[in-house]
Length: 430
Image 1: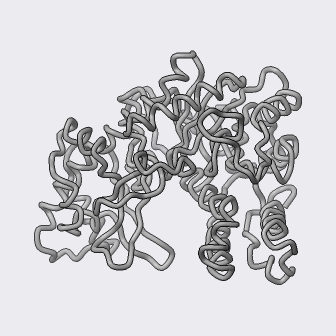
Image 2 (image 1 turned 135 degrees about the vertical axis):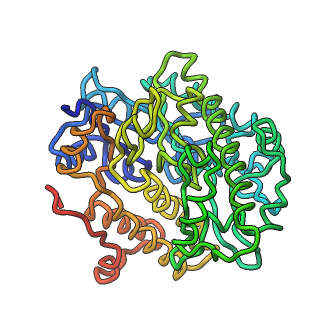
């Protein structure tokens, strides 16, 4: 099979503030030995929309310019009229700063990003989609790789996880899970079976849809014990596993319904829709599976690093291979630090800020975009093409350099910048 679709994915406006569209398209060609046939432009990022919007202004760091139309025009000039231009939305929308829209953890506390299940959020994203389409994008990409953050926290039993707002609880009940949110802190095993604190964050187990459908407690418990998430002698382990699988089966269906609702304005306008996933299984930060999305007909296609062939994951889904670990998850974490640098410096101080920047920089090693990986994609019949972020270590260093110049008015010394160098495979331009 010949790879027909080559998608250059630009996850943050920070990349386009550093260099114009044609720079990243050249980088993409150097990495992959192929010209991009499609490009994904950042439309609604972590800090706000990057176009004139009734919802929220363009972030001040971008001088509140109407950027998306300029990037669309530049893309068409370089790629030609036949290119497909997508606009990307990261679903976090923390910039809305309205607690009524936010996720609510199992302890009843708000998390400062929006819940897709909330009808008001669906309406807001629908408004953003409609505005994007008016600017001339050919399709809408919805990035849900961190739709439901989860973490450990001092002074809490178990993990802060998912969303248990009234809209989520009503939707979960409609899908057959009727227990209250309190069970997720009164019975820690329900989280510990799939989440585990590590030195670098939180480890996770992502059950496939077939485990959820068949309530496969045997495999879930065996994996949780093998990875030392739980002790096999723990009281009530099997009962907890059964209840957790029941919850996750309902949750992936609820998320799939929410994604379909969010993208409905694009469908109504006969525009293309795609969803970026970190996994075809129930990744704990996306809480939906490829089969659940396919069953709900949530989007036209799905972009993710790996999916077995259709004999293992049946359905009529369309897939693009995203050549990065967990797709955009690690890129978004890095650019969240970059875009929020000024505030982080004030709230946490320079040492903690640099620690965050170094930690998220190291995660960029999960970028696998290269000619060999692209060639391999063509061997899989179930992938229609590939997508990837054309960011190498030199560009990464330049981003850190520019960030330092903006924040401090000076440049970090070379020996400190070297700490942020990411290791990449030998590729043209590296």
